Length: 95
Image 1 (cartoon, rainbow, N blue to C red):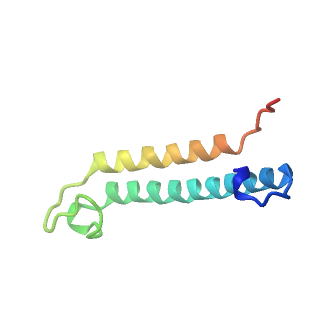
Image 2 (cartoon, one colour; image 1 turned 120 degrees about the vertical axis):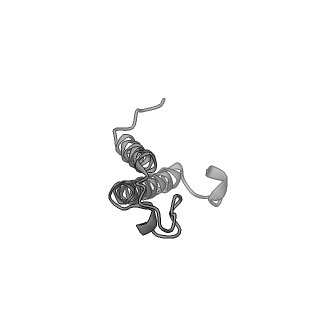
């Protein structure tokens, strides 16, 4: 990461840059988590014929509910929340 900055910058700038990246990563993980949980709920309440056409499992005329797709989406969304939570925890000091 130090190679990205000009030769006259200090280490503090690289620490600030990594902190910004962590916050961006946490925000992205939370947004992805929310989207995946909502997608999981849509899979549970809508039959395959009512799913948006870009969803995997969309089948015209089918009354089948994709419960496994919903469970998978929900669990991956929860994993994204867990990732965001662990990223916001205290950082250990390295010497």
